[in-house]
Length: 258
Image (cartoon, rainbow, N blue to C red; front, top):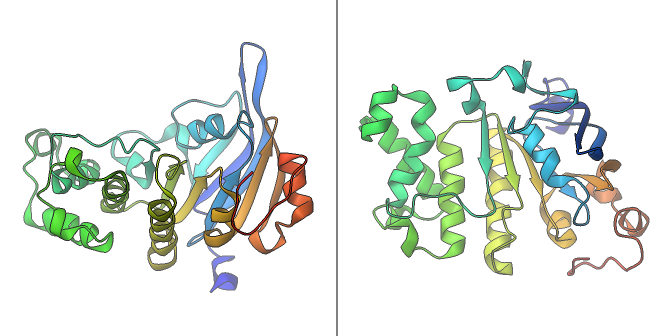
């Protein structure tokens, strides 16, 4: 399967990304790609540039140099419905608390329906069935009519992932999606993202602080330090030496994080 994917255009290609704020380079000359069905973890200490990188990947900010492509399209030129190719999963879920889980997932269909239908939340049967299928895949079909703010943190993040799935993207960008979750819920969320990559062929790029979670779920690691890419390797090669490149002194272990 992996060999076959090498002949398919990458889901994401970042080339030479540089972004400077007030004379300080937050990221410098970062390049990497994410293939179909691949889960790439972005690691690095606080201040390494992960947030700036993810804002450039999703088009929330424009890099000073370089470009980001989803398939064969420049992210800077994706507007309106074309942006549905990229789904974003945030640390803080970004759900509408007073709406049901189902209505939040249906927001993932906004790029696929006329604007007036989205404003009035008048989705057709096919969209509702798709949203329910997505909730079923994240294990929350029974909570479809429950208000989002009555769900646990882990359940809310699962709704956010179901919303991303309903968008039918080619790329999911997850910005520290487990940072506010307990260990069991966090592992469950990453298992979901890994499963989506495997089953649907979606490229997933996910920033993490927990090295042991990256080792459990990612195919590859891109490591940032002081705004530069210092590691880009299969997870099997992320050893003690690579850990030291990212985090300096300290010991990597199977169950811990730096």
